[in-house]
Length: 193
Image: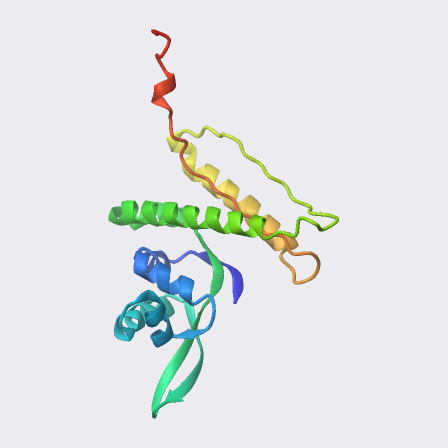
C-alpha cells in the first residue's frame, strides 16, 4: 500500500464522489472481503461488491488475494493508498459534480482533523523528546489566482514527500488543511450598544 496516490484521471476523482465508496475505501485500509466490509457497514455484500468493482476499475483498490469459501472464490481487497491527492487541474473538470466534491472534501477534512486529534492524544507524553510543529495562518487569494495557489501548494508538498518519503528514519505525519475562512458578521457594526 502506498502512502499517497496522486489522482490525475477524471474517472478516479469521480469514483470517489460517492460517500458510500469513501466508506468502503476506509474499510479497505486493511485487507478485507466484500462480505466483511458489508457486515461492518450494515450493507449487502452485493452492494459493497458493486462499489469495490468501481474502485478497482479506477485503480483505487487492489485485489490482494483470493480464497475459496464453500467452493466459491472470494476476493480480498485493499485500498491502494493511505491517502489520495486530487490534482487541482481536475477540480474544474468535474463540472456539475462540484457540490458533491466540495462536500466530500469537507468530510475528508473533518475526518483528517479527528485523525490528527487521535494521533496527538496517543503520543507518549513521557517520551524525552516529541519533535513537532504546528502552524496556522490566513492567506488571501483572489479567485483568479486560486488554481495557481493550489498548484504551488501541491508542488511544495509533493517535493517534501519526495525528498523525505523514504523508508528509513523517524516517521512523521504531515497533515495540511486548506479551507475557506468563515467571516464573523457579528463582530461588524456592533459598536451601537
